[in-house]
Structure formats: C-alpha cells, structure tokens
Length: 320
Image (cartoon, rainbow, N blue to C red; front, side, top):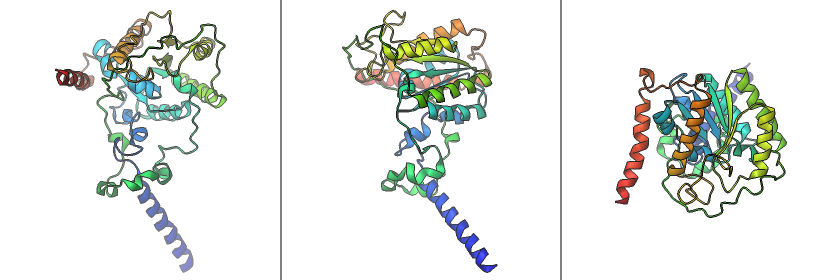
C-alpha cells in the first residue's frame, strides 16, 4: 500500500510540476513570443456575452483589412476580426466553436484566402498543456512575471476588436495580378475542403448566415482561386464578395491602399473595404443585423470608435 501511495504521489507531483511549467512558458501578452497567435484573434473571449453580431475569420488579411470600429461607427453593426498570420480553416473551426460558447453571432464572414493555406500544424498552439513544445523558444525570454502570472485570454480585452492599425503606404504597381478571367479553377487542398464543409455545417446548425469574402491581396489571389470559390459558393448558396475583381464596383487604389507589396492593406484601404462590406451587409441583411448605436448595452463601442480615430489623429499630427 505504501508503494502504491508513493507512486501516486510521484505522479501527482510530476503532473503538478508539468502544469506549472506549461503556465510559465505560455505567453502572458500579445508581445511575447507566440503571443500573437495565442491572443490575437482570441479577444472575442473577453467581449460581453452575446454582444457580437458579426464574426470575421481568416488569416492576416483580416486583421489588416477589416475595421470593426469603422463598421460600428458607420452602420452600428458589432463585429470582431479574428485573424492571425497563416491561419487555416481547421484552426478557424476551433475558434468558431469557442465563439459559440459566449456569443451568438448572426452572421459569419470567412475571408477565403485562408482556404489555400497549406500549413498543417499537428500541435494545437492554443492548448496550454502543449505549451512547452509550442512555445519552447520562450525559455530565452522569461521574465519574473512569467513565474506567477496565469495566462488568461478571457481577460485580454482588445479595444481594436482584432484590427491591427498601420499607416504605411506602399505604392503597388502590378495591377494585372488576377490574370485571365477564364483561368481554370484552382481547388483548395482536400484537408481544407473537409474543414470548410465542417465550418458550413456548424454555422447552419446554429442558424448563422455565411458570407465568403476576399479582401484585396495582390500577392496571393488570382482568378484561378476566384473561379473555384465562386463555383463552390454557388453550389452551396453562399454569397461571395471578391474585392479583387476587375468588374467589381469596388475599386482598389494601388497607390494608397497597401502597407506592403500588395499583400496587406493599410488603414486607408481597410477603411474603404470595411465601408464597402458594411454597405453590402446593410442592404442584404437589413432584417438580420441591427443598428446598435442607440442601445445602452453597446455604449462601450463609443470608446472603440474613439480609439480608432485617435490612432489616425496621432499619425496625422506626427506628420505635421
């Protein structure tokens, strides 16, 4: 009996020590190594319960090209931009499930560039019990606070609602990046297709409307991808907004809209794309989406809007 108790105690001590190590190496802020993927895109966990009507999922195009503050200021729609670099549709499904624990979104926008992400991560970096493996590089940067601070994404309120501000301007010159309209459709990887079907299933089971979106992205998008997504969206009765189309009513300003080499949008491009999307949603989903600007429950969104315009004002003043 003593041996059994000794073994059990050893197991418990080892387990407790391992859990403590997991807590220590886990990022405590978005600025720690791995913190961007651990906290960015997860800020909806800190939002008031059932306060987000629109969730936007995708890769880095989302946090660069969609501004929830602008959408609320102009249309009164509450939204969250849940995007991280190289995010896959498989990871998005996990985020969607976590969203549904505290939110009841009426509409989900999927930025479809993520469907062509081929990166497959066998280890889930959001699982804190795997932290020693996913965040092992943090051993080199541990601070005293890491030994007594518990990581908690439910308290990491993001006043920008997932958007990452940038005022950099890169004058992009290759306006013919889309190629031929008759390009042969380029299928998404099979693994991603399975995850996409699961994504649609989850949304429809929870009575959530779906919209496919492709934000301007000259470095990763073309008509071959567009044609496949368009055909898929028609077969599955899902609206598809592609802001890269030449004959679209949306016009990209290649001299002002990008922060880098045609890959991500700056604040100028993000404002324009957000307003275009908002106008589309207002017209198509007027009976589904409510204008929350006069509701006392959503008064805190005024701070969200003020924070966004403060960034613009501070940048403008610094240029004088």
